[in-house]
Image (cartoon, rainbow, N blue to C red; front, side, top):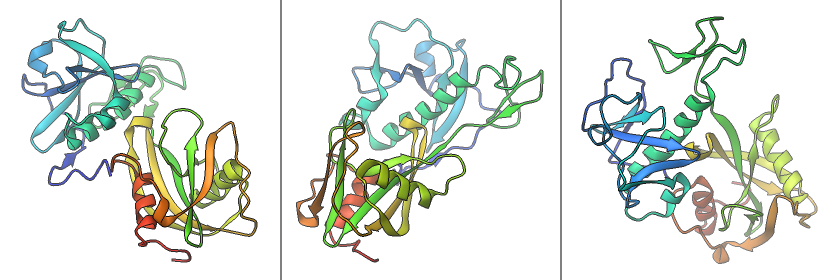
Length: 275
């Protein structure tokens, strides 16, 4: 999956003492896009200028990454590209793609935390931790992480595969966000019912994945269909929902997602009904 970057290692602790140096990598992000050269590399602090408003993000191995907090004038050889397009970019190493997706998560949070949601005052960065603080009312805001579920619904030797109505075009599984007052297991049952009209049983946790491109923490679950197996698809959400035998499952074109790994685990027989 995208976070499996070994032998590289992410050090995501916020460093209150970090000051940008010319060799540090910069993620300059606007409206879901990131600054790159030839869709292959990201700028260094020294290339954009030391005086710009940077904030420390994290490090991967010995490489430090900073976020450019405000738009700037960029050299003509640089352009803004969709962060989502990095997923299919063979010219960028996996650990760098993971860094960019994680930076997108933090960039969205900084963008949305400029003003206090309690009193409307301007927020400032904490001097102690990664948090935004309101000097007027004392409100402290931490990076928001949204829990969501990915669900592999099993019927004997078949897995329920879906395709979204809009967006990602390859095979997927039932998925959705956890609502207020709801357990992850309750989310599983609700989302399967809403998207396909199926009831499920034997809900069991598999694995989780940070998915910074959508500010999510994905929680993977398997379960079995309970009773009627006729699919009643939500056509507003999906364009396809069908039972597929394990040997006929077509995987996604990369190994980045928890969804793809869960499909693979069922396809190769590692996961079976009732296990």
